Length: 373
Length: 260
Image 1 (spheres, each protein chain N blue to C red):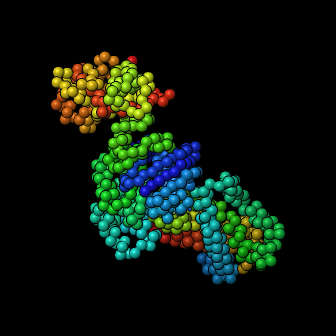
Image 2 (image 1 turned 90 degrees about the vertical axis):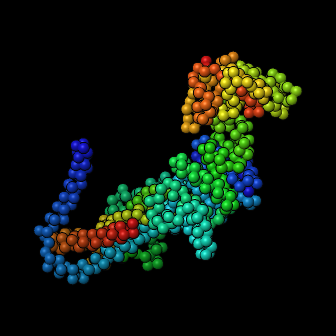
Image 3 (image 1 turned 90 degrees about the horizontal axis):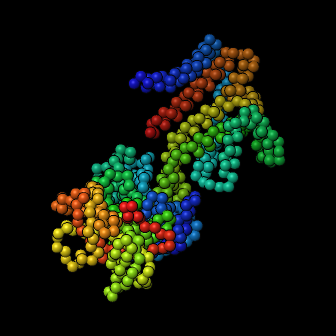
């Protein structure tokens, strides 16, 4: 559906690319990256608003690199929505249909469907778009983008200015739109929760480069580079060396701590790796609780050194007794209430083999220091 | 609260002093103003001609200036091209030159082969309406470009991009989105350009002269009356100029308010 080949684009001193991407067979694609990573420039180049320095853009199997924006059949929802302030709500929504000279009856029927879908009957007759709330503006901009029935809908951080409640409502609505209207969506965002909630396929963009592409679980649990791992808030990262390749292909890793991690092709003893585990994958066990065989591996005695309380979760910062390294474990509030942990309490933590990821350590790559010294 | 009052007074005081000063300028004419003379002046052919010429020339010159300034200002606001800074600076030239010098420049330019070429098509400047319009246009066009450039810079380019993706060509996006969004700035530019054009004197006198009934506009008629020490006529013409200007400016402003 969307194919990008060796795309390079520039804005001032910032260079995007070269980017190669091939999104096929999925209808919701998310590009996730920190602010300033080039996401908007990428969208603008794909939409034809900025001419690429080199490379090609294919949409729906057609090379559109040299086609003007209005003929690419893409609708666009920018971060600031940019409703036309000189037009009423209805005229804003009908703007694209009028420019494309769609049949009146067809437009009226699509408008009725969108008003139902986006639950915006109560605002359609407003004459001044400045009187709309943030969520209402978002719905109007969405209806305006969808009315011409584009092949592709490009979203540039459309929910970034909304409060959490409205944001969640609209994210759910967006999934509905994606499924009901069958429009392919390319959504760029820096919000990881939003990216994983909505994207079937994800690409991680950092410093103008795509660092990893794949299904959401691959990106979440198996980061391809340390940059990606750090950006995705992997808090437990260790520099380790392969000591032994076990008969089942697993790797015995050593440095300040010893771990058994899943093997990968081409692993050789002596090779340096970065190994990590997401904090919510760390298993926390009371000191005297019997432990099943699946948790016997990578099991460490530890002491709680800090407890960080977030909205619905808490992070236990524990120091491993043998190595002095710290590991973060995330637990839901209800579990924390049941366990009743406090700073200074002893416990055991298991870094399950299946939850560990490994990345060959490039020369010069430095992982997060996990020592307390 | 007291500090707020001091701030308010500091800002309002110069405004009231300025308004008072203008009131003094206008009010002091009453000593020389006579209503019967005023009505008698209004029936004179050369005064009526000056009024008509001023209105026609100012409207034509400001319309041409705005017509050229809109695309020029948009280009300066949106596009990057080699020599942009130079062009941008050069456009400002009429704003820093005195109108007399501008008039001289126009006359000298019309004495070149280019001027001769245009003269072959009947486009001569001395003692013609074309000369008055060209002189006024040359003085006011830079003001229009400057004002409109600031206006277009305030229109979010993202609006135009969204319009393009909704099916507009670049031109259609300009017509349906940019111009309506710049409407207030454009109307302000029209008002200021027209007001400056109807009051233009220096360049007009240099280029088109002050032939009564031919190229004598209201400002040049005032100058002629003053040079002949005909104070009642001069004051009458000043009052006519003020009344016409206020009616037009107020009318445009009302139209603008209604559109809002």
